[in-house]
Image 1 (cartoon, one colour):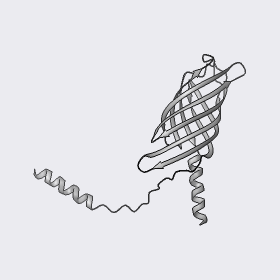
Image 2 (cartoon, helix red, strand yellow; image 1 turned 45 degrees about the vertical axis):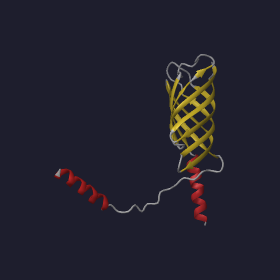
Image 3 (tube, one colour; image 1 turned 60 degrees about the horizontal axis):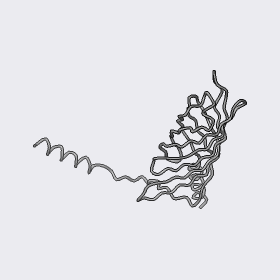
Image 4 (tube, one colour; image 1 turned 90 degrees about the vertical axis):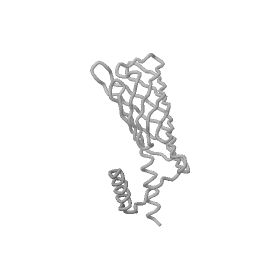
Amino acid sequence: MKFLLCVLLFSTTAARAQTTDTTKGYVPETWDRHYGGIRASFGVHRHFFTELGYSLQRFAYRATHGFAVSNYYGSFEWTPKTSGSDGVYGIKLGAETIYNGPCIGLELIYRFNSNEDDFVAMPKIGFGLGLINLTYGYNISVNKHPFGGIGEHQFTLELNSNMLIHHWKIEKRKNRK
């Protein structure tokens, strides 16, 4: 009993000895429209691939509900040539939604090289913050996966510059005043 009383007394003393938090937390604002930015990603689907493109992104924040991000994008995908498979190029259109972390999306991809072409629909799920997302996608191929270096499963790390660009614009406006 004495031990429990000592622990209780010590914990309240230690808690009262803490200084007041004087940091000013940044509270994100809701964007009034979609802002454009560069989108880059890399990942694996049997082999390494990368993509570069342009995205339109909108961010919404409410203290009672958290954050939501909508993202529409177009990009160029490249899977390099490896032993046993030719390089593959792709033109991609996609959309994704993020709500407090969980992410869902859909991509439509036209992949091609000098020998084959394919049209792919890829639903995806993952976790994201809008600036950076990690997703898993399943490639649904029209031509039954003609490329040796591209399988049915895909893991991607996505980077969107929209939030950085929006933040820089806000800071620039504040500094002008």
